[in-house]
Amino acid sequence: MLSVGLGWVALAAALTVPAQAHGHGTPAWQLKDTNTDARFRGLAAVSRSTAWVAGTKGTVLRTSDGGRSWRNVSPAGAAGLEFRDVEAFDGRRAVVLAIGEGEASRVYRTEDGGASWSESFRNTDPKAFYDCLTFLDPRHGLAVSDPVDGKYRILSTADGGRSWHVLPNTGMPAALPGEAGFAASGQCLVSSGPRDVWLATGGGATGRVLHSSDRGLSWTAAESTIPAGDPARGVFGLAFRDRTHGLAVGGDYRAGQASPRAAAVTGNGGRAWRQAATPVAAYRSGVAWLPRTRSSALAVGPTGTDLTRDGGRTWRTVDTGSYDTVDCTADGGCWAAGEQGRVARLAD
Image 1 (cartoon, helix red, strand yellow):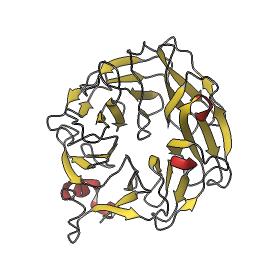
Image 2: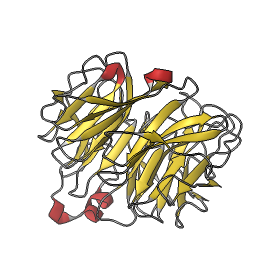
Image 3: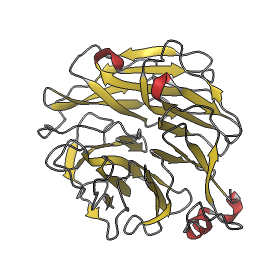
């Protein structure tokens, strides 16, 4: 890892060759042995040293030494669940989301680094299927379900995930026919600041991004420019570096299918989106801004990692390893996770 003192601008400038070409001083993804074959679509990077991952077979792991060792902190009795999102406040407090129809959608919370968990929400509506969650601060968080009776359902907490309630849907626009969210990277619902939240969609006639500026009570919808029109296509991941500047990535998640125009950018909080002049090379499910820059970000997917240095207008492939999600921290830690237990940290 480049030292924080060198700055993330220098890192973004250097990260322009594949990880397989390990030259001296070349930053690259450095794989960390997790000793599991679980697929990790949930990732919460706390710092360069601390991160949480959540995935298949009810698996939750935590590291506090930069990935040199991992502690299995999976909730008891959760082996049959599919964890797709994790949000962590530090090395001890975290919230994980299990997805699925009916009671398969659940939320768990820990305050002791995963030594014990409490189930704080279990969905009882057979029509609901929760995809992603996000926290705006340590108390206020939201989770989103695919449309129920024609509208997305929003779950809210005001006590750090200890209790949850469904918000009224009067401020939610109607979902398009066939539209849904993608539980692919924990990034179909993201936030920036104390009140702004964005929701990524696909499957409908167009890939849309919905925005709320009041913690999920009312929403507006905008077309993203990322093609949809099929249950496998749309917007899969979002990242906002502030309440106005955002990135969207997606495409067609089926292997071998083309994913043209699979990246978009906004400079007005998601009211309008512009197609990337040079989009990501293929389907990408996760995206994250590099800290301490205003224009650099990484996007990841099963076929590789792409880098932008101009705020999402152009992207370039810099690695061909398989990852589903990516997350970066203010102290310069960038992590990625995916299939077959793959977890990596960006390193020098």
